[in-house]
Image 1: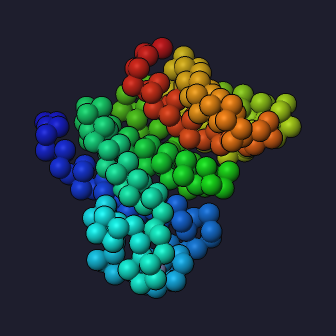
Image 2 (image 1 turned 135 degrees about the vertical axis):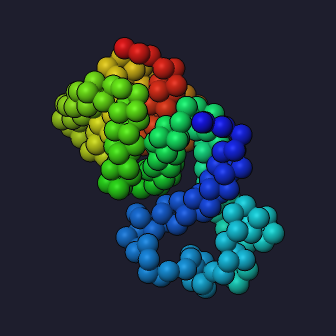
Length: 243
Ligand SMILES: [Zn+2]
């Protein structure tokens, strides 16, 4: 029996806790810092080890007024934003799921999408671990929705076409994007994959064009495509085309 109401508080709490962990991933993965050493989080400025009191999702940031307890350095607003966004996405997933398998697949998709996007915006790279988690989630989802065969074909085509675009554009598209969309396409069917790419392109334009006119970007600025691929794919999944 699938009872959504029960999952609302669970999703909120797990979302906040996982969001706190994703902040660790976003900081450590691109810097090559081990996830287990040091075991406890530390202030990036004074390196002071943080206690549980400094690590309560949303609450610590609010109580400390966005400053390190030990050195007073400003804590990036990214921390509470990632925590709140994870909880919000976990709740949306509850609403969009019909069973626990769907829920787990969507939590994985949104989690990897959030971590990959934050890293992609800062470093122009998508960690392989996030591609693998996305691929696993896609297989789970399309198996549960009885279109695994079509989704594997879609993913193979998507990977091939993006790889070709990368070659033709002389590496204008990163290999991370090629891998990542290959993984995302495991959620999709041929038609919904086309829609996903269109939505990704439109959302990227909506993001870039205003910046272009305010001269925040030039023709040479590189804009990460990963976050928009994640957005386009997520919307396409929920438009629910069965072709
Ligand atoms: Zn500090």
